[in-house]
Image (cartoon, rainbow, N blue to C red; front, side):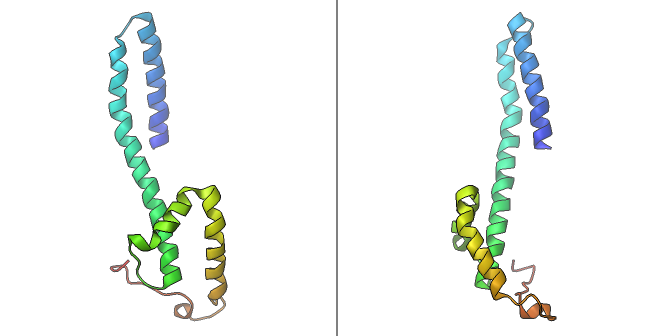
Length: 120
């Protein structure tokens, strides 16, 4: 939705620039568009950071087998943020987590910790 809104806004701004060049409207009208884009951009950045935090928290919970706080998963969060470099540190951790759990077991509680939704 943000991308579609941004594309629509970009076309509006470019048409406004051309209209301002011909003298039809005042150039100060362009600054009004930034009032629309800034809240959407900040919200999209919040969503991206929260998704990275959720992934890091999930991996740390599987690794430590307990409910984790923000300080426990900060390193993974930044590793996901700088993904091309961070993946070199994340992939061995995921490989270790997968190797230590018996995925062929018939009892699902034997290999993975199931957390109560209220605590997670």
